[in-house]
Amino acid sequence: MPLLGAHQSIAGGLHLAFDRIERVGGEALQIFTANQRQWRTPPLQPEAVDRFRERWAQSKGMPVAAHASYLINLAGGADKAEQSVAGFTEELRRCLQLGIDLVVIHPGSYGGGGVEAGVERAAHRLDLALERSGALDTGLKVLLETTAGQGTSLGSSFEELGWLLAASRFPEHLGICVDTCHIFAAGYDFRTAEGYARTMAQLERHVGLDRILLLHLNDSQKECGSRVDRHEHIGEGCIGREGFRLLLTDPRLAHLPMVLETDKGDDLAEDVENLRLLRTLAA
Image 1 (spheres, rainbow, N blue to C red):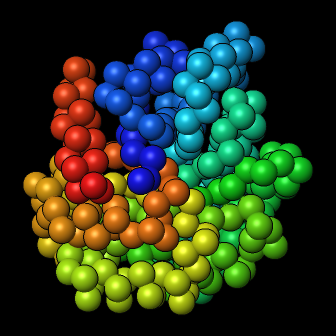
Image 2: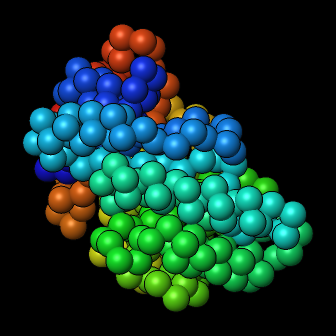
């Protein structure tokens, strides 16, 4: 069975994310390592790093992924290029300090320059961040997240993700994070056995299933092909339970960490219910 978990807050300290994921019975964790809506972030203090690593060791080594800031746009024009590279370089350095080896990032938005130029820019800037951060001497993997296709964002088609992987000088440090809401909104309908088989065949053809290292499990408020990114609780959106059952019972994905990114209150009750339903579907 996949390792099921959720994105959790780091409010009060990075290490407290482990308290929250354990409270909901999760087996995998995703966090932001800093405020995802700010460019400037203070350096990690040694005490915070030590507490995080100690708490992680107590969790029996559950998979942990970090999600990079939404401000970073590696595919965009020249105006914010250096800022985005610097921001992502710092994200990778924080993850290396913490021991996190899975780092999720949206491929970015190419603006008016076209897809091909956007792919070239994103791949070049990914390579720069990997080089500058020191990650090339480690097992760290940058996971390019599938996107819903809003505006000029890259990554809504598996072909674009395949082009990005091929354009990098360091493909061994790249992987894919599949977001169920995003691929559904982008037009991949996996709610039936036939649709699921088609979707996975296209993923295999353009990316390779071995490049998938993490999944985001989110239902969708909007219909297939809407290109609108709106997460919904499992089974309450347009994907529905059958699509998740097909994914969760696919033996090719059974070893992977899969995390929720759905809304929740302070008591985390929504995570508890979503994880309960996912485990029922997986069984």
